[in-house]
Image (tube, rainbow, N blue to C red):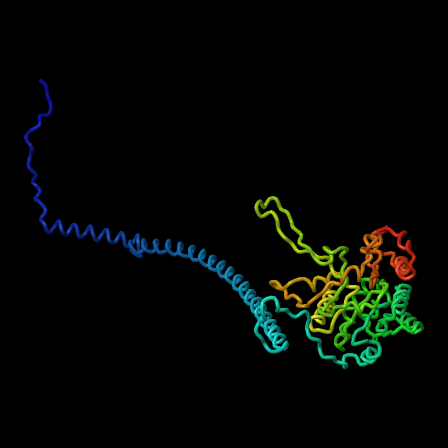
Length: 430
């Protein structure tokens, strides 16, 4: 007999169904229970904590961004401060330049008005600009003692002036003996030491020694040629203030004629040249060639050899005094500067940005009348025509063996010894 389970038909549940109210009550109870659990786990509230976390994250981000912005603003502020300081400096510089320009403009207008009444231009070809400026009014209070000496020595308010110390005593004697021989009365030696003062007095040479001035006296006693030469720009100012025109002369010069008979007096400064021919002495068009520029490879330049600061005629005008002041000031700032270079730069350089040029008129002396030793020994003595000319002066400026060459010049031009110059080389053997 096989036994097994036999399913019977499904039986219906005997539990009564829940009513609608019961189900609601159960749902409410579950909700309350969940609320209690959430209140215990999240005492500050579920959404408030999430919001707090979001705000904390945002605050951290904002703090980071703010620090970067602060640093960036500080950097920009520093940069702006630097630019502001630079702009303030530029403004100050521009104001100074403007004030200087206005001052120069006012001075120019005053000088222009001092020249006289304005007039209309003359017909073509007849108009001529001023070659020189009017003389300053003499001021004897500058140096009454010197004023009395100049009254006796000068001729028509003009005289030759030379500075000398004991280092050039032999040359000085050759210098004034030839001045006496020519018959030039208006000359004066500025003695830079007591020995030269006594020497000139013993030779009946007009002499003047300044009042004690350690700045000048110390150089005058022991200074070489260049150091002594630089002093003249300070010393000559008093002569011009007193109303005298000065022919400044080094002592390595031989006088063969009276130079006052050969001056034009149409310029503030009239100077001999270091040039050795017409081109170098009077100027020429020097063409520079730069092939890499192609079509514009040629550039024209103006060139002229310098004036010799050891022999020049200077008139008592405002530009002349300004020239002396400028040269003296520059030499005081730079004691190793060469006075002749500074002298020429101040005369030649034009006004340009940051610099106001000197407005002085100038004339170059005839190089065969006011002759330098390069012209004589390199050209004139070898030319049959030029050697017959008699110069006004010969300046032994190109050669260090000055005294023997000075004596040879006297032998050649004064004593007629035709071979007196032959033993000397063109240049220097030093």
